[in-house]
Image (cartoon, rainbow, N blue to C red; front, side, top):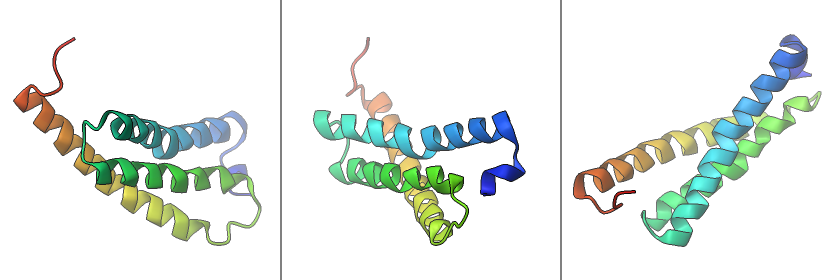
Length: 102
């Protein structure tokens, strides 16, 4: 098992952080963007794709990773593109005042 090399609590924290960072966060933000149509739809769908492939991090609990390195690479690439696109979109909203003020 891959997590055995980290040890107990550290392994659990690493796994939880990885799933939150590479799966849940981009997936939920993208769902919100798709529902409100505040960003281009392709960014939302890319974030959902990144979120789904990010669930592969939970497979670190398995003894045989199999195709997981390929899935992690796809997830990393999708998340990098999504982060750049999301950052550019949010910067554009801030400059133009489209997002409004709270």
